[in-house]
View (cartoon, rainbow, N blue to C red):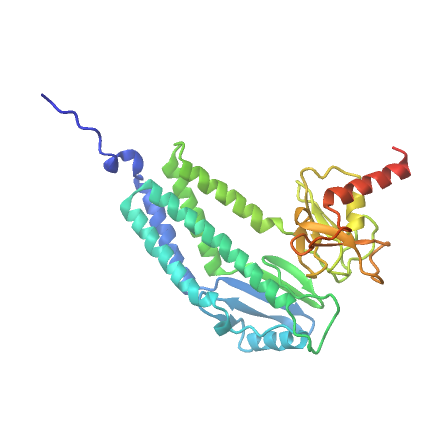
Length: 353
């Protein structure tokens, strides 16, 4: 009698990658070695007193000036406005990052050697999460440096913060700050893109939950890193409802439509009045946390309470936003839907509609 043997799933071709995805995975892993030798990010400041600009580079294990005295000049300027000095030894991430990148390189090569499809998907997924976490931590680092200023600073401008842009260009007083990926950061981005391409080629139309989860993670990660808008409080932006200059980082808010159009407001009352005139069903709405100047809250996480006595807000705005986590039991607090309903009722009373 012949015994039929079931196929060994461990050696099933469906669970292994073909040659090209494995080669791409090896290339992606080895490309990360560039991060040990090339700068990851470049921040440059331009101003009339520095016609050639001053800059510094963020490396995997250190921070270096673009010129011989650039980092010292940046720290001197930071001292005047109350920012902490930029010292590599005080940044713990610079101690962890080489180990994290090293583990990514080794595990990527091991995944390619194993040839297993699931190992490829898992590696690219971990790489994606690490990249998103790195950008989020970089934003947090910039926020901390730009907002937590020394109270005894030589130069103090009420409501002014100095957070550099995560990526792009931003005006900070008479300085223009530029923040862009440098060669090592670009190499890391290419490595991630090559890894994603390897997953696409290895998937070849299969309905893999791992691949679907990975691409969902990629989409949500990109949305999170680009979702948070920035507001300027130096008078360059005007309220989209009352046209007054936006200068107070404790009041107001911002709306970003589904098409990416941004509307800024100097008070939550103006924001609500504006929202009463258009459909915001697909828009994203934030308000400034009065207790944490410059910090934006999604309206779902905010409560709206009467402004402190004597505080002048825009065109007679009467409410401010605070985090619902810190509000406690306040009978005078309103949710966003209540504030919006009141604005709709007020508009109907004026227009008669």
